[in-house]
Image (cartoon, rainbow, N blue to C red; front, side, top):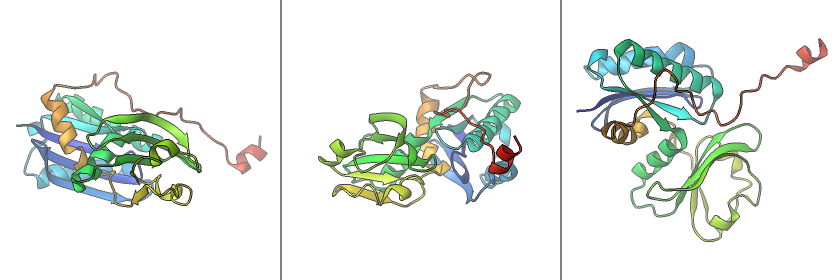
Length: 231
């Protein structure tokens, strides 16, 4: 039996779930700015208690590894690694965009088109990749600036459903006939359950000491105009 605690903090949504053999039995999440640092450990404690388990009864910790928010990923991964050290449990890393695509497919079992999860990376840039309905990767993860020509070759042939907090801002640009948009929240820890269970079954674990989030882009500290004026 695989009892896995799952942490998703790649976006503004702070989400925690607990699954048994790939089925979610408890979860807690909330959306808002700067929630992760204050709420993540509280959510974890609530989820574990609601599942009727102790921390030591967990078999693994899974975390959404990115891409996504630098701060959110850092908090999520640091918390997951801390639990792994304290409990002597293995660490599972789930690629965030794959989790989003898996979540969409779990809610749309008959869907046969392509899925393009998008995470907002500011302005018209998103972190994105493209999957088919079997979760095969057609376009690898990248930071992409979206314009009217984006995904034109694929959209000329088949439907692509865009989802995630990066997709909404692209709706006015991606106006091709085969473009679809799903506004549901797929940055949710329960959508990690089946992927995490598969990773556990295959003993696909990370080195807790050396694992780092998949930031995709280097974190750049920017100065405010006031700071720039002060030199």
